[in-house]
Image (cartoon, rainbow, N blue to C red; front, side, top):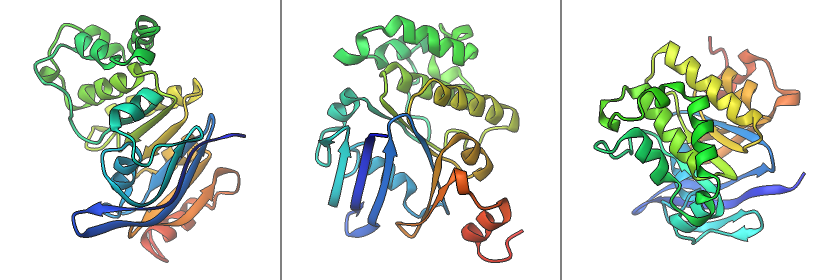
Length: 240
């Protein structure tokens, strides 16, 4: 299987504070991978570095054979690596439909955008129902659906989702997880950060456990340890 994304020896941080200490991860074509680990240990920093939102101090990021370590975020999106960030990053006064259409802004994404709009509505029927509403009137779960919908409108070749169900009710979490599973089934490669390891195991072929800015464990789904062993990795021996 061909390598789509290759992150090697990645170091990055904020100002004088280093966060990532030589991280190595990869994503193969057609593969979904999961990242998990304690909050504040570098998962979001890793995603921001990969998508060009944070400067890399050392290491390399290669996407489909092209070095994107120093590329602009807009060029990275145009190449097909699309990051739906954690939290609400929408324009509140824009309507749902115009927000989705605007997301298909680059030349590559404009091709077939109407078909992708129909696919987004199929994945998230609530967005079709609320197409005339402004983003600020949506619930938290609906805004997250819109954020993922915008990422899909960019025609991703690799889609990054940073804790897409954070803070949502169990019912909305279930809806979003079903939609993310459907995206994976359509063959779009994924990097997903989630705290629900069972969900990640069901979705992904491999998991990376990130602690203190390093990958401390790689779990292959085919040889995955049981739930208790994973909890011991995450929280320490004897976690219940």
